[in-house]
Image 1 (tube, rainbow over the protein chains, first blue to last red):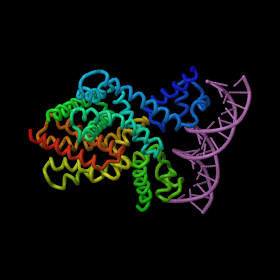
Image 2 (cartoon, rainbow over the protein chains, first blue to last red; image 1 turned 90 degrees about the vertical axis):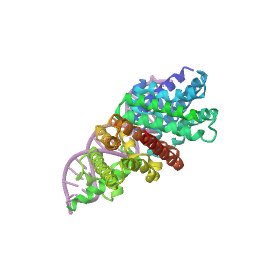
Image 3 (spheres, rainbow over the protein chains, first blue to last red; image 1 turned 90 degrees about the horizontal axis):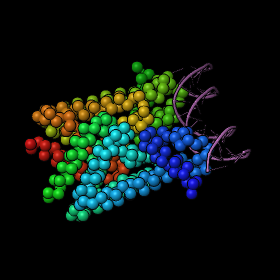
Image 4 (cartoon, rainbow over the protein chains, first blue to last red; image 1 turned 60 degrees about the horizontal axis):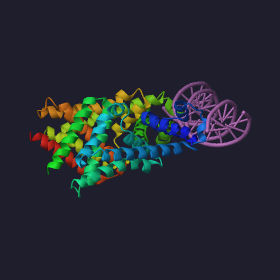
Length: 189
Length: 189
DNA sequence: GTCTATACGGAGATAGAC
DNA sequence: GTCTATCTCCGTATAGAC
């Protein structure tokens, strides 16, 4: 089982570097340097760079599912759980201001590259989308639950993009407040 | 003056290719092929790839200023002009669904690359930001004009990002409708 | 101004010793 | 399982003929 240690190190280093510098702009040399192994070594663990990308996406899918389950387990009603989502922008404000949203950036890059792993990356968005839609369904918005989920997802993407561009923490807090107000207004109907 | 023809062709081809495939993923070979000239040729016009990027950004700045002026010249009150902005998402829905927002994608990529031209690209956002803030100031929102400008900018960025990911035209129209409703609600106060 | 030919570096990927 | 050495391709960039 020890052998998986190096593989896990590679995946987590690649995960971080893909987020910080993008997929295409991260080389084997970069990852090897971050892990502290030689370039040649990790062809033992991954045959191609695409394989590393797939492992990173799989890793992020697992992490995301765990986060959503943790929010569900934290108690509170459906509205409170939706607020867990929007407040993630505040909790992660530092990395977001520096590097944007990891999901949005990856999907955007893979789309531009015409990369075959784009559907898997889109699956990261779908996790949030379906989780949010489930909450809105619980709140009684059966017809528009998916629309509302996409609405919050879009607003969070816009916030992350502009926070990254303008490095403005007050902007993030203001916009998250507006998302909360939007949710309150929906609940009043 | 004929000599500028080739230069202009290079800039517009690079502009399009940077939008479709990203800056880093567009090679000299790609641009040369699109223009129909040899690779070697355009070192006569641009010393480095960064020089082409700067020319593309300058070109986009000029185009954007012209578009904003056209919206101003089209008549209508400030609110109507703000709607010109949000409805741009519908007018450009096809390229947006295929390639996202050209401004957001470029700023995101240059940030990840740590590229020195990032401030210039950010200037593209600032054009919209200041133009929108000017409109909100005209409408009497002197204290919050910039906040409101950033709010619309963020929402449009989120819409473009998710439209690109999910290729959903109905989503775009729905969200633009919500932006219009938001504006109406602001005007009622 | 435009071309061909070429230099040079860095990328992903492979072979084989240890 | 990890290393060094090496291969090949493609990227930017340059030199010089036309």
